[in-house]
Length: 299
Picture 1 (cartoon, rainbow, N blue to C red):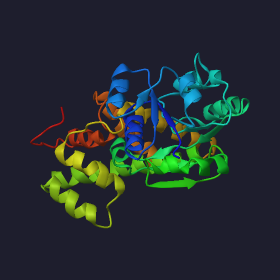
Picture 2 (cartoon, rainbow, N blue to C red; picture 1 turned 90 degrees about the horizontal axis):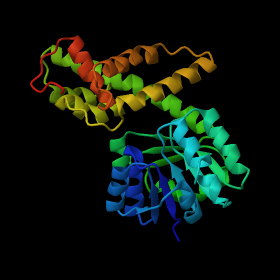
Picture 3 (tube, rainbow, N blue to C red; picture 1 turned 90 degrees about the vertical axis):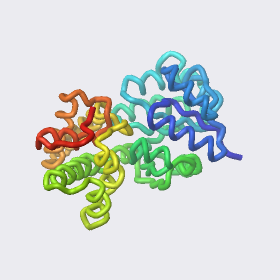
C-alpha cells in the first residue's frame, strides 16, 4: 500500500511534485498559506488540510518545500506546526534550499518527539519538476530514506543517498554553483552568437548539440531563443540560493571566482526589475549590455 504524503508548500516546486504524486497513485494532502496555490493544488487532486499539524496527524510522509527559514520554523515549531501533532514515527523530508544549521535545528526538535527528519534538497527547475526530471539528494537516516524512496520515485528520476544529515545541502550547493555558472555561460553564448548575426534557433540546435552543450543550455535555451522568461526559478528566489552557496564557500575558505562573476549578472537582473522572471533572463541582461537588437525584446 502506498504511503499517504503531505506536501507542505505548494509553490512552483511543491505544486509540480504533488501533481506528479497524485498521477502516480499516491494519496496527497497539501498545505500552503496562499489561497491561489491551494486552489490550484485542489484542482489537481490534492486534498487540502488546514495546518502542518493536521498534515502530520494524517500522513506517513511530509515533504517540505519552503521559501525561507522563517517558513520552516513556522511549519515545524509554530502554532499548529508539526511538533503540535505529537505523533512520532512519521518521516519529514525537507526539500528546500536553506542553511544547514537551520535545518539541523528543526531536525533536533523533531527527533526529540520521535519524528525523523531528512535533508533532501532537489536538483532541477520548476519546468523539470513538472516532467519529473528531478534529482533528490537524500541525507540523514539511511533506513528512513530507503523507506520513503518510493515517494521520491513518484516525482523524480534519480534518488541518491549522499551521507549524514546536511550532506544533501552540501551536494545541492555544488549543483547550484554549476547551474549558476552554466546558466550565465549559456546566456553569454547566445548573445555572442546573435551579435555575430546567427539565428538563436540555430544556436540552440547546433551549438547546444555539441561539446559545449549543458543541461542549462538545454533547459533555458528555449527561453533565450524566444526572449521570454516565465519563471521556473525566480531571480528573487535564486538570490537567496546564491547567498547560501557564498556563505558555505566562505566557511570552508574555498575560492569561487566563476560563481562570483555570475552573481553580478543576477544582481543586474534584479536591478532591471526582473525579480519575478526566470533566471534565464540573464540573457536579456547581457543583451542589453551588448545593445543587441531583437525582434521580440523582453518586457
